[in-house]
Length: 149
Ligand code: RB5
Image 1 (tube, helix red, strand yellow):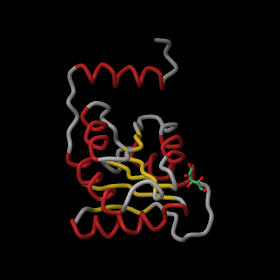
Image 2: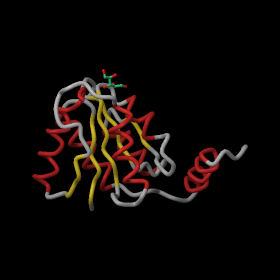
Image 3: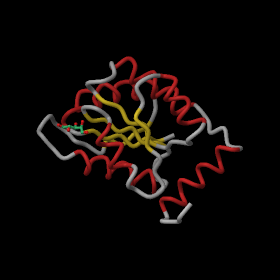
Image 4: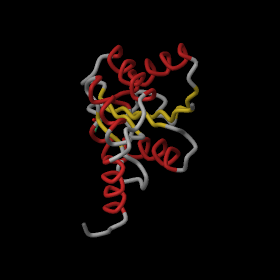
């Protein structure tokens, strides 16, 4: 499994801590930046990682900013991306099981480094439930394609 990782300056430290966790677990990742605490614009970094996930180059994306909100908004503009802001372990599990999320977003000012690691472990190891949720995912794609519901 290969993960796409990105953050803005507001979550540079959280991203570094996540990298350490992934390395300890032997999980491959690519760091799409940013690469310092210098102020940057979060949509760019969210886009770099999310578009690589949408292209199928990475199985999942992990996006971080101060709140997790901005990167999630940017990622969800990329076709094929279902990005979810997670603040606890239950959300990390449920957004995989019900929403088949392919990007997890989180905020450095919202979660601890320990919680971030736990949410990532759950997110990447939980499968999609399918069934009735498949139909709902398909409706999300319809909306994305401009179809009227
Ligand atoms: C950057 O100041 C901050 O706006 C950003 O990290 C993010 O939280 C936006 O949603």
